[in-house]
Amino acid sequence: MADLNLIDFYKDAALILLGLHRVFPRKMDLFVEDLIGPDPVDEFGMHTKRHEACLGAMLWLADEGYLRYASTIRQEGVDQAVLTSSALVKMGVINTRPLTEAQLDDVPSFEAQERLTMAEHMRRALQSQSSEQIIQVMRTFFEPH
Image 1 (cartoon, rainbow, N blue to C red):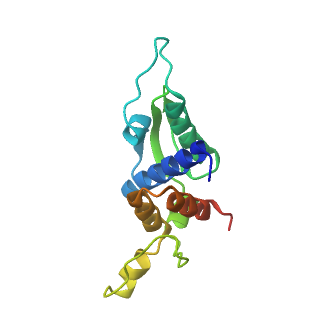
Image 2 (spheres, rainbow, N blue to C red; image 1 turned 45 degrees about the vertical axis):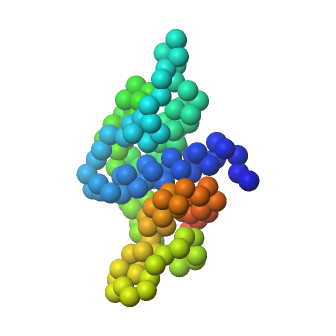
């Protein structure tokens, strides 16, 4: 079983990428709270480790070339984020390996192909709430090609 921090990272990364994919090519502000819910700060104004990890996932995705952003918004998120071209291409890759269960019966071939994209595999894995599926899909997404 993967470490809990990696499970959270894969889930956060999928949510971030899908959020940006949904509005592409528009830029959007990404807030940690929108992804993982409210995070009360402690008496010193510090966020929880979970909040810091989600923000870290945003910054890691940028460092690795999956998204661009204009600036950080304090420790709350990133401003004017957009998918990079390489991330957009990876999101649209048709993956016929059985990462998630795709219903392909009685649908036109174009729609069947769309249901096999990495973006759709991510959506189904998140909807399933299965850590194993999320890990499998995201590891496949991050594989170098």
